Length: 589
Image 1 (cartoon, rainbow, N blue to C red):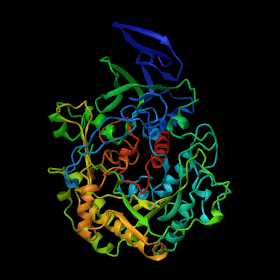
Image 2 (tube, rainbow, N blue to C red):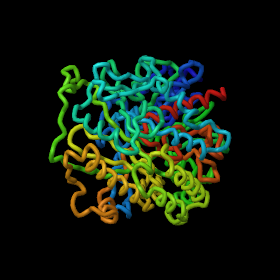
Image 3 (spheres, rainbow, N blue to C red):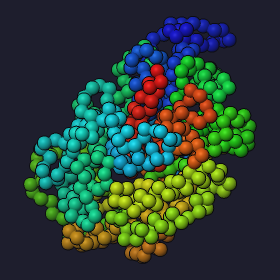
Image 4 (tube, rainbow, N blue to C red):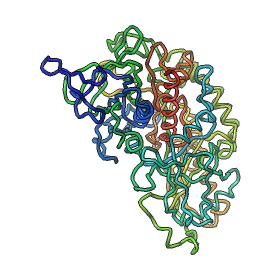
């Protein structure tokens, strides 16, 4: 049956030979595959490419979105989801923008391409089940495999000191790669900020933005250097592959995972805008790559999750796994603006006519800063955080295993807050007017993404629970006070900066805290953590090999398995995670 498709029309079973490729309809799908992947986004297409490249195994990707042009068109290429109110942020609600398209959020993101610090990936290993291979050293080979670097252009003035080191990158150009590209253009107005910040106390210049170190470095864009177009999971892991053993079914929802006992045997699918359903067999494994928002929903609908929630929804409990949908994290920010009374001069030597904008975007300058660099009271803040009762900052009646996991994260974060190697804040140096968006890069508040028991197949309830732990406000306050210091002292002090936002009246830490609760945004569209790779006794959902606890032949490979968020945009880490996840599967062949 492997080379034939099985579908139902008017109650009649038909057999038709098909080749691999884009399936326009569920009627073109084969009845069975070796691997069925739920979700054709950043991770899903990466895993599918790697599992199908030998030609020995058949792979089906089922994607709710469609194969269409990349870009951001709200309501068309993104899901229409609004969060639950955030009481600590004035009961405001927020748009939850995630990609609803082949390529997932890699098709609609801002194309800023960054890694976290080495500490982030070491913490993944510290929280995962014993004898795992997750660490900075364990994931760096997959960054190098999955991401190809386009170095800076030689005509960029040496004054900018755009540094890179190829030991952190791959450098093979193929049609099926993901590219980290230094664009041709660097705004001359960035130069005075670079010069001033590199000499500011505590700020180090790293040798490469991919080195896993805190400090200041230039970041790239996810752009194909030859075409100037977006480089994302579709271009790198689907377009032009034309493999007979790799099918993509678009416009189709996976309603649940099918089981024989506790062994995953396939999926039940329903095309969009129809009531038809069809079962697809997975001979080897089902891999969920539906993303942080929808992966927990699929697990819930399949009977895997917190038993009380599933029972309220009328779903038979297959595996009581309390952590499914908990541990939700995202980066948060609030915009801060200044104006210079004395504008910094633009050095004539930087106005090189060769340095003109091209279709690759512009190079950005980012700072990934530790708490000791930012806050003079960092040790007392860390101690105050460690002294908290973890249950006091989680939802009422949170399962004891989730409380234990949060406590373990609390111990790790409090320890790392004292280190110069762990980033607490990140912001980009302005390439124009001095406007900043300081980002809380390791928030300590934890939210949930859970099905609505009264309507479990509708969009899940996304609750950021932003700033539910007041330490997040304390860290954000420290970040704004740090920006005020950098803008008014040192080399930038000569330009007589005036703060516009927040501005007068918000000078003290207490007033800044009030302002942040009014203005903070709890998402930079980097949701992670809802199917965490942690020990089961700590509320984990998958083990160190990404296998779902209590189930057989079922894995999760996407951003939802990140136990803690990384200090950077998340897409590059998802590619590396997916590359490593595919190898973990292959080790069992």
